[in-house]
Length: 95
Image (tube, rainbow, N blue to C red; front, side):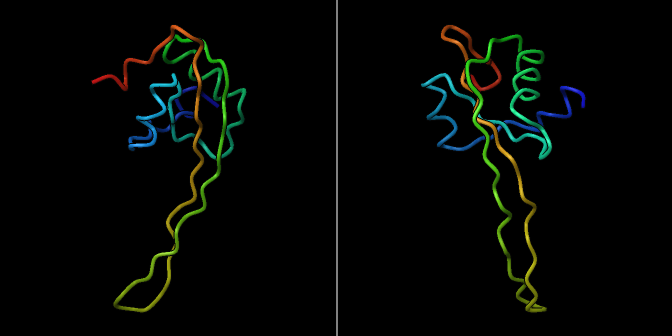
């Protein structure tokens, strides 16, 4: 898997911006990617050193359709919280 296929997008939320103060960045990643692949992708794409990678699988929410009374699901996603070595930063998240 190519490094650009592992990292799908950065997560933009209040919680993810609060983690930036602790030098941790949140990304949506490919469902089949493991922690080693995520570490290598972040180090290659952004040119930083990764200290730790935490992953979490999020189940898709069930959403009800008001017209047909059917229930669908949003897709399940996988997120990675990447903590960088002290002194490294990713400028993508800076204002």
